[in-house]
Amino acid sequence: MKARVAASIVLALGLTVGMSGCTLLTIQDTKYIKESANGVNGTVGKVDIRNALMITNTKGTEGNLVVTFVNNDDKPHYVAVQHGSKTHSVSVPAMGVKKIGAEGGIRVEFAGIDAKPGSLTDVYFTYPGATGTQLQVPVLASTFPGFEDYAPSTPVPLPTVVPEPTTTATPTP
Image 1 (cartoon, one colour):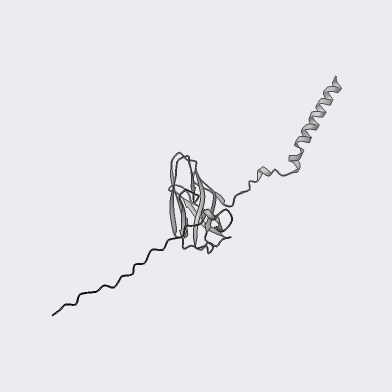
Image 2 (cartoon, helix red, strand yellow):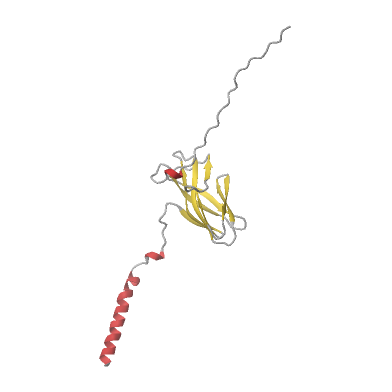
């Protein structure tokens, strides 16, 4: 009887060591979170910034910011998005999600910028009462496969008005 109990204990200890041995020798992959998206993540106050990236034309002079905001607060926030000297304000609902730059959603576009595809560009996010955060956002060209729909809208030139010559009456004496 004692031999049976001893054998059961030895077997249980052997299984425990064998089953947990891998965690002693190898690094846990779940310990280090890696971003699997093209964009970067951050947080400003109680608003999470998810997968932020700038889609530009091939020259990098016009950009469309593609980002998802997740508001973890029970109050709505107006997040200010600044690139260079240009700022846009985005309303994020309480306990809600707001997608920017995606199809059918609002667009936050910047013109007259210098953000070459393949580089990183600084974008600053803040809202009243929160400490802002600056992210180095990846810049991708709208010519990359899958990003064509996110291209910045090309401004339509205004028509130029050319005055037509008119004849004026010459006074007769």
